[in-house]
Image 1 (cartoon, rainbow, N blue to C red):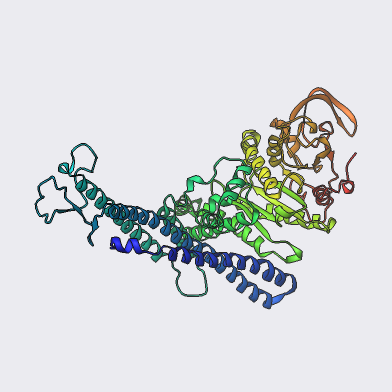
Image 2 (cartoon, helix red, strand yellow; image 1 turned 90 degrees about the vertical axis):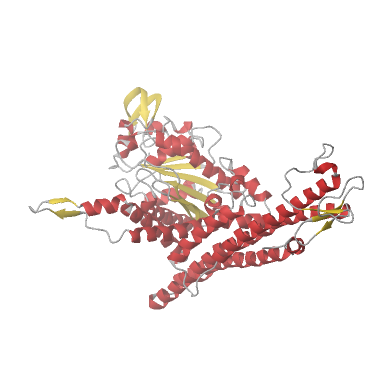
Amino acid sequence: MPTWRQLRDAKLTEYEDAADGWSSVSNRADAARIRTDQEMAGPLRATQKGEAQTSAERDLTRLSRNYQYIYGECGLVRTTLSALAAELSGAQKKLKQALDDAAGLKFTVNEDGSVEYPVSTELPLAPGASSGTGTASPGAPIPYLPGVGEANGDPNKGKAEDIAERISQAVDSAVEIDNRYARILRELKAPDGLAVTDDMLVDEARDMGDVQKAVGTYLDRGSIPHGKSPADNKKWWEDLTQEQREAYATLYPAEIGALDGLPTVVRDSANRIVLNEAHAQVKHDLAALGPEPPKTRLDAGGRTQSNPAWNIWNAKGGTRFQNQLKGMTAVESRFDQTGVAGLPPAYLLGFDLKGNGHVVLANGNPDTADNTAVYVPGTKSKLAGAGGDIGRMTRMWKAANNISPGQSTSTITWIGYDAPQSIAPEAMEKHWAYEGAPKLNNFLDGLQTSQGGPEASHTTVIGHSYGSTTVGAASKAPGHFAADDIVVAGSPGMLVGDASDLDVGKKHVWSEAAGDDAVPLGGKIAHLGGYKWGVQTWNGIPYDAGPIQTVPSDEAFDAHRMHVDTSGHSGYWNEGSDSLMNQAAVVVGRYNHVQEDN
């Protein structure tokens, strides 16, 4: 237990210096992870083949994982030491003020924290006092209040009791702080070895929770903006010191990674902590359930029936864990593709396991891109199926880069809303689009904010299937939609009757619909289109007039109807297709390269 002298003489700058050292290690590890992924692993994949590549890539993947772990864990040590110094500083300041008050009154503070004071000459000596002095200890029943007769009428006794109490409180506070942080610091250590295991990542997540509880108000989660605009988020971040930014990013990575308007590299580093820890935890939880039992079994009569063991396994989360792992593996696989066929680094702009799971993944850094495409998928989109959506935007990046090699392009998969998970009845309901629209608008505003303004990048929003309905809901408000062009594919309707009703203006609305794609007609049955007074035509031949419902592939909707050479509802991003190349031409602003149907 520290004494008041130890607290008074404690050199808290030593803790601060140590925190700076851990900060340096954490930041260097993050920078090393980025170099490993982008400057080492990327070129390796682009130039090497065979077993040599496989072996080297495996080692680099492990190295990147190690750096990621060091970044997070050392960041927690840094924050813990900084918070310890800050809290002890408060207790030390309180102690020194009490000691200064004692010195000013010419009182003597004893080793045990009691305070000797001169007894008033007008009063008899108290029991145990000698030579006109008294001793005050903490715990006096009544504090000193001038002028009301406490301390038997001796003001010095009351002042001494007050000082003794303040000294005791400062020391007790320091003891509590020391014990609390000593436990946390003992836990912030890793086992020996070169491999970061899933158990270590699960332990890191527990460490993060413990540090969050320990630091109290030093780094308050409540001060992180919630429900604010991207501009407000950016200002909050920029107003922090560099030390505070680093601490928030490693102590509250989920919150920082979700803040639209913050720099892409900041969100990426934070979200990778969340992804790694979530992946490890889900693998741990799935393994704890044991092997998956057969889904069905034969009864005594040889008939197939549901297996109760599988039902129990599934009720405990088996299928959900498998789906989550599938989605997280798809994200990590995209990380591993950096450098293959010139593919740029990937940046994780959003990730969580809430509901069906969400992920926002960019090919290339949108903060510095000349052209940006944001893809909004439709019905049944979720984390588990992210691989297909990520693949579409990977092919989009390649196509856009090929036709505009002198510019930089970023293509983003945005599974940032809760999409309907069934064709009927969910995809026939409009509320999914209206609930997703504010989230999409906030994300687009955040991109524009982190990029530096509306002129910094040419932005195209691509909506597929029900995703186009969400885009329609987001772009109905005039002057709010932070994009230059809208492309829709297989749209069931955008909740408006004419392309001019969308914020980008009809000259910048583009539609694709394969001849055998039944979704546009299905959207009309569900009334996901919009209504207008007009004439419906097919190849220029009128067939309906008056209040008509339109979807983007209708001539009456008056969007650019792009040529499609693919079939079905999901072929619009087939590699090498006209369907893909037409979208890419819009993404890079080369409108004269777009093939349109008359």
